[in-house]
Length: 284
Length: 318
Image 1 (cartoon, helix red, strand yellow):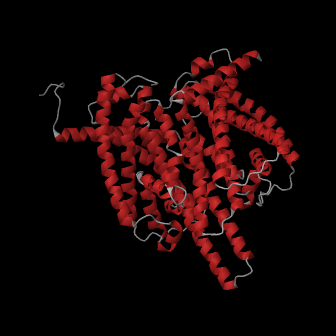
Image 2 (cartoon, helix red, strand yellow):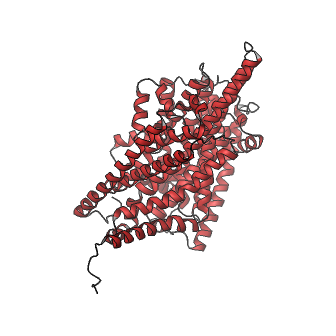
Image 3 (spheres, chains in turn orange, brown):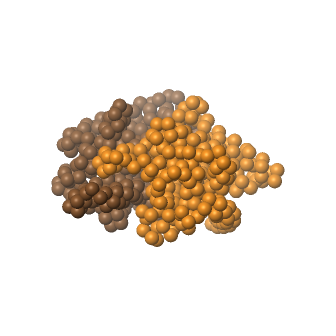
């Protein structure tokens, strides 16, 4: 356990240095804020255009729905990218994977550590985006004191599921060419469409709703939104589930995805070693 | 017979040499990349999902609006039908806006990650010194990267367009195909000219380059109106028009605005909020193309001299 913790700590420090030491701290802070806020502004403008040409009286409930979903989606993009890009960046960019891989550490824990700095930055970005929405865009957030423990538990469970999914992708990327950007854009795209992040699942066709209801992140977004904005009048199609049931679902999902991530990671590692792909480079 | 060491400067030889360099540098992107079939999945299919999310947002706006129209008891049946038809028209226009924006996003990402960052990436993996020693013009090298990149990205752009028509049922009305083709290609030349200019600047900025490319994703998607009509920025008093004008320096902004006007017809103008007439936008895009190509030529020459002088041409991870 001591080795795992030491690996995690050093990998987290390394990840932080790699993410942030290319510039001054103040510039890094601006960089960390500008991207997610600009992403949120795309949605703001979509809503502005909708109000301007389609519905002059506006629809604040749907705007708050999509804004909160988009803010928490920052976690999805950052945590997934933070985990699965480790193998490809060490392999293709820094070409250091062979040295890290043969060192006496758990490579799985090393990846978790490298992702930790991305989670820290994402937490900051989510907070800034939400505060901006509340103070400047009229987003309806009313988090009650008694709901805070459940909110924190749901967030921790959601992040665990995300980390496990990221490790699954990392296991696959042992065997693939340099697809970091395709994966970074595409896999979160699946969750963007099917997890009710920006629009209620009811907009999707029946098969799409079924896919969405099979992904644990859908329940994470729903409970987060229920706790942060309980008065939103938007049908998420999950009204049949109470908060505790959703929390229990997230606990079970976290355990299941952790087991799956270990299995896929080990399989990817095994086949990559067998095919001699652990330190391959693909320089198109 | 001339000795092999004599430098040939005649035009025909230089032209042939540079054309071979263009073909040689575009080859790995057109042929080489296609030997890795998984690219198709990662480059063509997965990005469609992100675009689909934006399409569904507009569809959910439309669904709620139509539900409100149906529930409005003050409307007569004729008024209700007209309002619903109007809502369907603007939903189609906005979904088409997203689909066209999605195709342009593909080219912009290619410009950022496979043009602007490419020379820095080549330095990291040790190819840059080989390029610098080769006798061709550096612009031929960048030109080859651009041609290959355009071809590679066209797969993704075409799949986005096809998905828009087949899956989302977008209706396009092209009245003037020749102008459409002209706008599209001038936009691409200007966009890749900008990428060629960035390529040499990134060589100077070193490790910051990667982060700069990452920083030019969402903010440019926003200021260029990739997923909404850029004219929407004029609905926000104060900073909105300033952002739209600043965003117009990126050729994708005006190119997209013109493409939307040319493919959706005048009936949708109230929904796509055009910035300027197509002819004006085409003229500005032509000017941008010339300016960026000239700037790329000079910045490349300057940065090459600077990098050689400071001895940084081959130093990695800086």
